[in-house]
Image 1 (cartoon, rainbow, N blue to C red):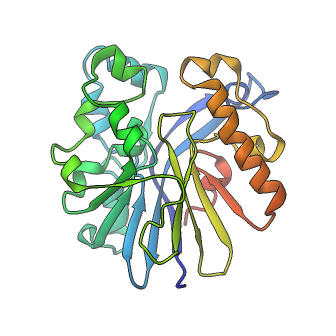
Image 2: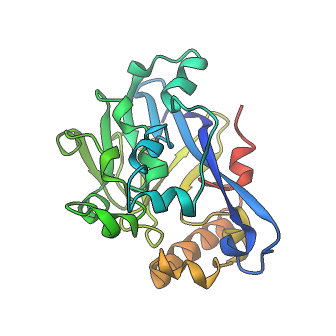
Length: 262
């Protein structure tokens, strides 16, 4: 089984109080949450993106009400306004070489760059996709979803993923269902070029300390989470951490993940 090379990238960030992100955290300390994108490179399957960041479309789509509330509640700073497509170009990577995009879930900070890759095959959980169909306004906002970020031909380009799926049919990447933060949220597991097993855990937790110590976020986040389901996914990560100490679990927004950026 061939292995994957992976690189953490980002085109922007927001901030949140540590106490909101993790039980026992400080209300006086803010944590910078990068919208990370993982570039995965494989000798057979080529280049794959796990999520696509913000892009400047986040601001375009939040100009009007009620979507403007999204940027008011989570003020965003773009480090590359032209999006992850430009981050790739700066690394000498032509966007056309991205053949696949895995969408962990459909929150705006994960799908902002989708329109920049109209040729790429898309991969998502069917329940995640179904959960954002025919919603707009406040209903969309409650799911951190901006309808204008989704390309019109998305469904035609989609391959559905679910628990245990062998994404490329050779055992090199498998899917874990990690719902709770969002309906149908998924992570992917693979072995990297150093031989280490890696799990990209999306937003199953925000900070690595959460899965290490089984710490839920503040109850105020019940407004955006399915609390019992979230707890189940966090417990799954905690158990993996305990029973597979060599497994590198990578939450999307953790500062430890951002520290891996080149």
